[in-house]
Amino acid sequence: MDKRVIAIHLPQFYPFPENDEWWGKGFTEWRNVVVAKPRYKGHYEPHIPSDLGFYDLRLKENRLEQQRLAKEYGIYGFCYYHYWFNGHLIMEKPVEAMLANSEEDFPFMLCWANENWHRNWEGGFNVALIKQEYSIEDDIAHFNYLLPYFRDKRYIRVDGKPVFCVYRTDLFPDFDKTVDVWQREASKYGFQLYICRFEAGGVWGKEYMTRNVDAAVEFQPINKEGFDRRDVLGKLCKKILKKELTSAVFSYSAYVKFQLYKTTNISYKRYPSCCPQWDNSPRRVGRPFTGFKGSTPSLFKKWFFAVYNRFKPYSKDENFIFINAWNEWAEGCHLEPDLKFGRAYLEAVKEVVNK
Image (cartoon, rainbow, N blue to C red; front, side):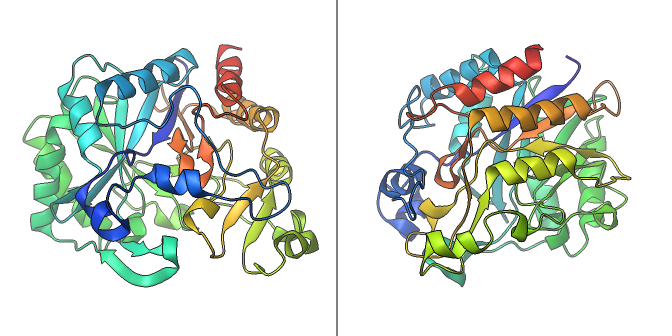
């Protein structure tokens, strides 16, 4: 395949002890999804799944159906979020089950979502639920946990190197030192890692491409690269949000136009990305939120077409294009079919890839 389209995948959709403790017994992302309400006139909420329903990712049948659907519509593989807090794993069950099930032959890679967790959904940004601590001992333990994934034949590689992404390399005291440990451990098994950093949280640029980072991944829509809010809804934002003046609603059409015509010159290796939608209001009930207004499959197709056709792979294997996301339902950001648009976003991907 000339270019490999990778969809970012959230394995949050099943109950686990930490969510029970923090958010209430039986909590999953679906609870945020179904209770979402429109916050302004014309606001598209809630997003209700259609074809796959309110699935539980502990069930192989649900995972297999996701993979079948993704493959049918031109997605090469999933990039699963991976949560490791000094040996404490969260949301690991679906991906562990996938690894153990040979029926699931869909290619995958992992992205370590290494931010601290806070009570952001309730506005408690300074209340930490679980924190990251970095050490050489933890780096070794973490690598040993990941080793079976890296050695799996389904794992996505570049020149034989398993691709491992890290969401926020800037949060490490010394990211290169951590990678040195990982590469030393990997060499014991006859391979090296291909390290990518997500350009998330507004942290992007060549200065973050340290010696052990092989490539960056543009993370849309967090990385706006100078997108001017005055080009979106401007004063209308205050009008439609009324009292929620600290929220920010962007025009998806204006953002796509910005992406099509921006002149950012990238002098380092970076894989492009795009997103079908974005709206985190389901996670911000009664609180300020950020979202797009007016996303449609046709606008997404226009953006994805430009990204796909402009991108020139750096080598035979360095050919990734990322889509955020496959199933971020509580952020209104999903390729999976919903009741409003059906499979239209997936159809857009398929038409561009096939053409």
